[in-house]
Image (tube, rainbow, N blue to C red; front, side, top):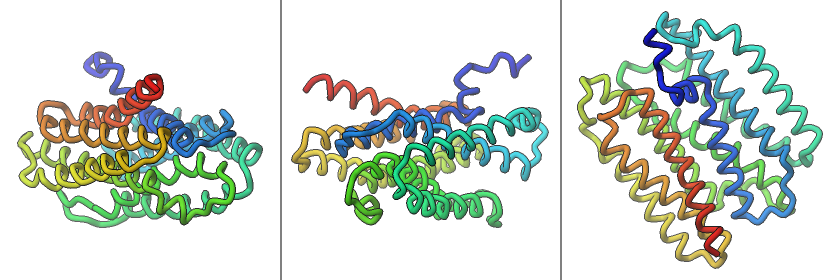
Length: 277
């Protein structure tokens, strides 16, 4: 009965729908910022399905390795696998039929990031209470790279190196990395009798730096299309700062959902800014 009374938004996280929503939204932001003239709807569908499939695969793999009887995914595993395979196949078909050939070298590099992340997240041995910073760095870079390539591939004569060195990619990858790391910090603090994590500056300082760089880049931007993107980064960093100071008030599942919300709200800021121009 207690499971039935769970708020609906917890199932959004449990079923991995938050990650595709964030991916599709930020793909739109990247495309608008980089002024992608031709950007088909298939790019958004393929990205959403690919991110959802990877998110569910990660959850199912973690659930299989931990074998926690209280994990709701234990019962849902067999029902989710066909959807996981279907999402992966549809995403692959859309990519093959609609994307330029240059996407494949980008997907190969993305595959390296994803495999390295899965290996660190599920097969590396680490003492209890240890936070794996390389794992979170790989998670942030892989997520940011997977989203940005779906827009960058439609820009002619631009290389992967230009993508990796772009301010937009670096800021977003850092924000994703900090958010991923922060969730581990907050979960560890919650397990320690719900007290605040003593090294709160490890989250607040990087967020402050990312926010400061985003503000500088926004001021320096010579294009009205570029400036809103950095405002979104700044807004996301500010929201994560607020959550970093208040996380102890929420349950662990709600903390993860609120972290996702910190990436969704900037999209509303972006739209408001665009409408004001």
